[in-house]
Image (tube, rainbow, N blue to C red):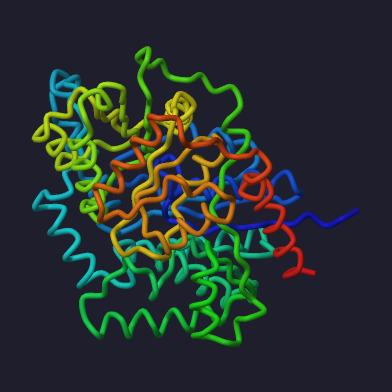
Length: 437
């Protein structure tokens, strides 16, 4: 009889928190269990977060054991304080329903980020490391996993994994969904901070049995920096789960309208791109604007909605607020076109939403750098007709006009197969089996 294999994932971010960032982990666990692995995850207990999606747990509740530890990081402590204070609120105040609007410019958000970036090492979740390590030791002593798996972003995940792997002599894998030192969104406040992270990146990455990266661009960077990694690095892009697209019920839309859907929140780093998109829509002729129904399916950010109002586009552009993943996909199922934004100058990101767009086989208006990784991916499958510079409102308007005139084509079903989460997990399975063989 073949010995059972145990895979232990270590990730602070995990459902029931929502958002696109947790889905890669959930899908790997889901499909690994079907390939003969006993799966488990070490994560944190309740913590403060702005979106939750309990439906994601349904996909793994019968196959993955979830171990949780306490934490002393700010968002965990915040959750405990809020829970305690709720006991003293009146039942009337608990029944008040307020529209959830994410205000990234709030003073307390800025203060937290300053403290996180300057004081908290290796990241804002560093207070989880000692308690996760203690819990992890107990889990490993009881279950004896064959391989540990750290997800990134989140240096804290890597720190816990590294410490446990060294303590128990267990091989480990680092999965970079984003980069570490070389992530363009990761700005270090001082030379000390960068040196600190550079030291631990080298230490932890070189100690891994295998390194998985989300794109060829990060593979090239790491290979140039650490030539010894050449045979250890594997590229597994983000993707889509084909089972998520079964039984979708397209959300009703206004008859005669052309619906454009953006999945996710337009965070502050993409403000310039979003502003140029709004300008592009503003300059469309009234006949074209009246044909459009543009929906942002995700967190409603105050600055983004204010810009819609100030440009008198409320009849054209709307926001749903955060929705569970399946409900968000129902909006995609009703779309005529999908929208993609990246930060101006971003040449490396391959955000997860683009793969779900590909799953729908719809046209994509992608406001991204034409030479960047996202545009190159679309070009590789002959689906780049909607690519436009994030700095050029005229170019964006041109792509919208072409969509309205029916000049975009749907994607071939054959071109999307390599982005299936099931296919990706088969590749991960082969990597893991190589490690433990």
